[in-house]
Amino acid sequence: MKQPGPARTPRDTGRALRPLCYLLDGLVVVAFAAAGRSSHDEGLSPAGIADTAWPFLAALVAGWLLVALRGRPPTSFRAWGVLWPVTVAGGMLLRWLTGDGTALPFVLVATTVLGAGLLAVRVILSAVVRARSRR
Image 1 (cartoon, rainbow, N blue to C red):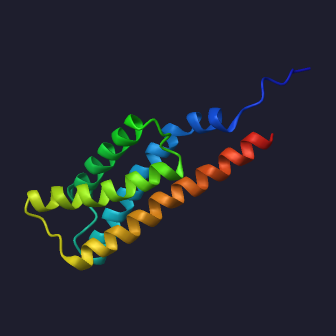
Image 2: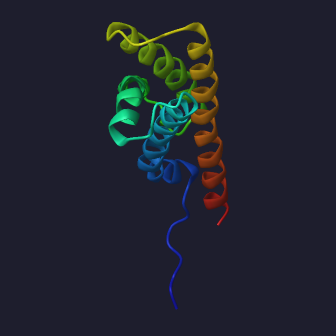
């Protein structure tokens, strides 16, 4: 008979989910870029999506670094409070610096979609942590 191992704590489970969190955060940004390109009939080629997504992905990585420097797990809701504004503001700054558009409607849509998407990642992962810690 197999002996049960040590009980997983929410902290252990949260650490194990970090790579998944990074992947899901990145997918949120890529999905945002793809949806935006699709709604403007700009095509969904990988190069086109990458061209739209890169400023926000770069800003997301900067946000992850800031979260890590603060000692917070990226899966936490406090991390979302850092990642969301850094991703939006940093992405817009990089777009502006490279001559891409930052019209107010685009900023508002990006703020809403990225905020909701990055929050959804944390809600889902939080549910996974709770479910795993109950086992």
